[in-house]
Amino acid sequence: MSVKVAFFDTKPYDRRYFETHNRDFSFDITFLQDHLNPTTAALTRDFDVVCAFVGDEMNREVIDVLHDHGVKLIALRSAGFNNVDLEAAYGKIHVVRVPAYSPQAVAEHAVTLMMTLNRKTHRAYYRVRDSNFSINGLIGFDMHGKTAGIVGTGKIGKAAIQILRGFGMRILAYDVYPDKDFAKECGCTYVDMETIYKESDIISLHCPLTPENVHMINRDTLSLMKNSVMIINTGRGKLIKTKDLIWALKAGLIGSAGLDVYEEESEYFFEDRSEEAINDDILARLLTFPNVMITSHQGFFTHEALTNITQTTLENIRLYFQNDELPNEVCHQCCGEDGKVHKEARKGQKKCF
Image 1 (spheres, one colour):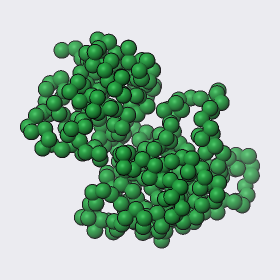
Image 2 (cartoon, rainbow, N blue to C red; image 1 turned 45 degrees about the horizontal axis):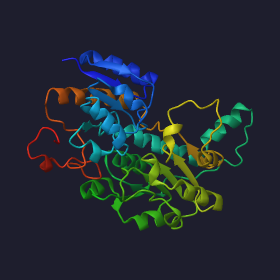
Image 3 (spheres, rainbow, N blue to C red; image 1 turned 180 degrees about the vertical axis):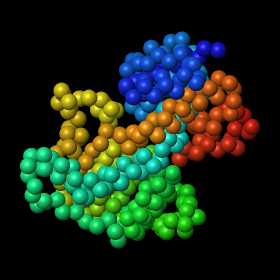
Image 4 (cartoon, rainbow, N blue to C red; image 1 turned 120 degrees about the vertical axis):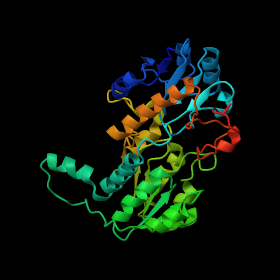
């Protein structure tokens, strides 16, 4: 059987990795540079699979078009699925994802943001290239002995904890499903969110986006934090209410922020806009702060992660068309808000419906 795949939001590295690994699967992949949205959904006619990324839009309107065009599977090459209307997809199109591609990649990037902001290596680099060897204004702090608050202790959060423990930091953690065995083994302490906000020198977000935690970092919670706190977000942009973050930065209520994600990132992140003005006033304002570092959702971007994403995505497609078990399927009936599949809800089914 020839399986036709419409691959949206293609970048050169996507094509290189998928063409290499598809030799073992032989799917008929059409690579498209367009984002999937209500306008470009028309391109999916006669395709069996849509392969989408975090910037693609799969609302009810798009889902209905895909279903009408005969698309049977949405293969997300990401862990998050908040850009998919799972309720609209249920009973029409199956949705699979890549639940864990490289926890170490994202955790290491989070720590990279911490260290860069702390020791101001990005600023030092440009100074030295201009023959300015002054270190005035580049003072940082010892990570050793400081308190890190880790929000979300899935695989990425746990990897971050293990790295920060290596610095000799005190670790506070919060998770809806605390892993007490891990806490005992690694020497971290589960606490409530208020304690995280009040006691942490660094707060790093590693939780999925759910209806309950949208804008968990807001004016009220920012007001609880230390004036010197560093906030790191490699999770989802909407965990932080950006307008309130800017308010806190302007007021000097927080020390610094490192962001690999942003609320309205889909228009800019992963794209080259160097020849254009930034029309997003909030993003433009963030870029003016010397104590803010923004990277373009590159936390996952390692060779190991891209290899895992590619292989898992292609394997998800193979399993679907062989009518095999779909361990990486997500749907609004069988999956919790943390993305964990409730297998008992399937009642022995290989697929969610």
